[in-house]
Image (tube, rainbow, N blue to C red; front, side, top):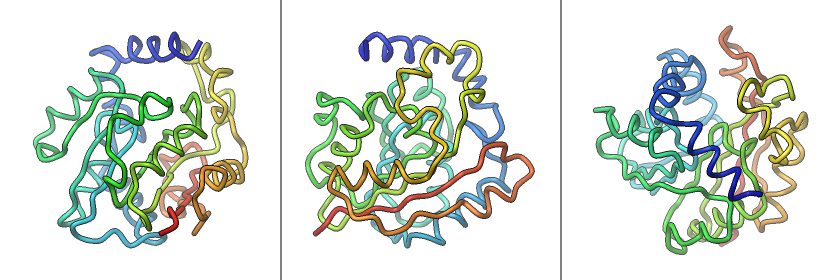
Length: 224
């Protein structure tokens, strides 16, 4: 079932859909104001320093990568399963230095994408609500992180009505698709072996008129 759902995901994000996603405000396309707000929310809960190795999981067309490039001296890798989404990301001049890898992150077989302790930070924007197996995904992230490394989850309290059109058929295959509490992601991260450092609202992002879904942030650390 998961293999079929994964195939559908990649098929749905064909070139036309990827281009459309990249033009959608708040999704693949962030205005400068939205980037400023996202960066403010990130820096309020975590100190991202120069020379950190950062993995953006479910990078899409590069919205979060674009935010991260505003911080100096980072080594950024983008993991995204849909080739068409990666093609859009790679076409952006400002992201030419980002290393891109095609693949999912939440299957046991996905652990092979990267080595143990390869990153200092794993960031995920609007990703956990779309994971087929969140617990396995979080365990993979822990494997990829160096001891003392951190996960930063940026996501939203999406309801069933937030999944429209062709995505309705996936809704009940994704455990966190319509989660209405900030408690579940931290709980699963703890079960995967992380220590929770912060659970908070994305204050700056939520204050924007363009934000239609309440967003939250979770920071968790892999014990040294």
